[in-house]
Amino acid sequence: MKTIKIFAPATVANLSCGFDVLGCCLDTIGDEMVISITDQQGVRITKIDGADLPMETHKNVAGVAVEALLVALGKTEIGVDIEIYKKIKAGSGIGSSAASSAGAVWAVNHLLGNPCTPQELVAFAMVGEKLASGNAHADNVAPALLGGFTLVRSYTPLDVLKLHTPQDLVMTVIHPQIEVKTSDSRSVIKQNVSLKQAITQWGNLGGLVTGLFTEDYELIGRSLEDVIIEPLRSILIPEFQQVKEAALSTGALGCGISGSGPSIYALSKGLETAEKVSNAIRDVYQKTGLDFDIHVSKINAEGVKIMNYPEA
Ligand code: HSE
Image (cartoon, rainbow, N blue to C red):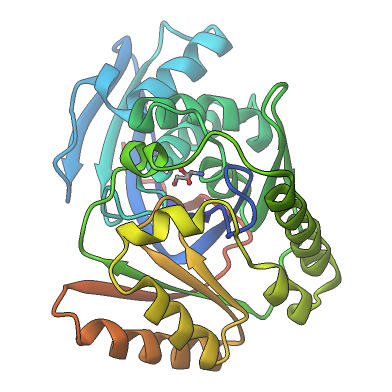
């Protein structure tokens, strides 16, 4: 039996102007998983700690993602046991399901000698996202697998690019302790956008990608704008506008909904500003009486990380 313990990172998807195409990987927030290759044919979820999630393989995002990988590799005769130690809450908007599906396929691929590149693993992890939300978006699983900032240039055919990560970027994320299902949050979005909105959005998307590669923090900041999704979804998030105003007036480069919410992200230059932003948005939320968590994290340029190889 071959076993590996991994860190499966949380991720912030969309980054305001890049709905379903942009995402970045966090460093201090993530699940732990122990994955083993066994002689007993089939994929099994053997333990879930920290969350009430399905143990049945075909209902579990990690289970279906690994099954899809094994079918593609022609390795359905092997066995895989998956233990999941959830630290990222489901429905938080920081890629909880993506961490499980990306972590599981990454670990199995690693134990099999890396037959797939991280880019190739994205398609298998997306099978988990499809199960979780009804939509096979890749903007959480791609940064979890590749690390740093990623862009899904195309879904058909799938073309995932790793962008540059400026060293000084630090993320502050507030997670109000309410659950917003991605499927519900997607149902409030309109299926059509106006040309005017599209022009603003793709201008900002190009600006953000340019800002990342040129390490132009001002450009990154002014590109973090979403005129299409945020106006519709932000009504689901208590105190969204107040949090955004507090973050921006404290020096954050930009602030918006993390993935499908309810988490809100703020991107800052430097840890000191990110900590000040954390305090400012904490002040806003403390007045609401709602429970919340706040995380401050550097960008994880690596993605899934090996923690150790436990004794088999
Ligand atoms: N792009 C997806 C959405 C991310 O916004 O619905 C879900 O975390």
